[in-house]
Length: 83
Image (cartoon, rainbow, N blue to C red; front, top):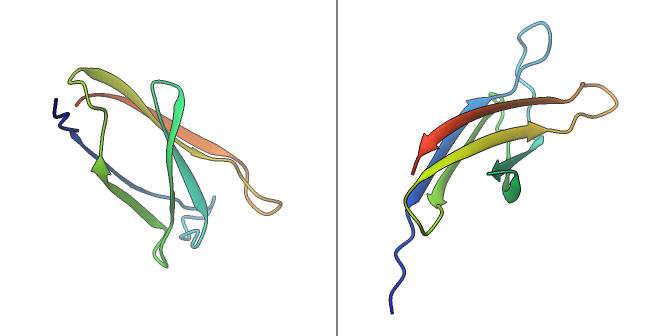
């Protein structure tokens, strides 16, 4: 039996309160509340995951989580996607 995984494409940016990019920070991607993958922001504060997604087609809640540091507070955003 072959299982074909769908592609999960998640992109966004991490900014501080003044709008300045927050670079080199880990951002976790959760799917339906379960940890999926961690990506790191680039020098412009952007992050991207473009890879294997869930193996079953359906509607999923994708949540991006920045846990914060001593200099930056935590942040998260969620979106429901059909994958």
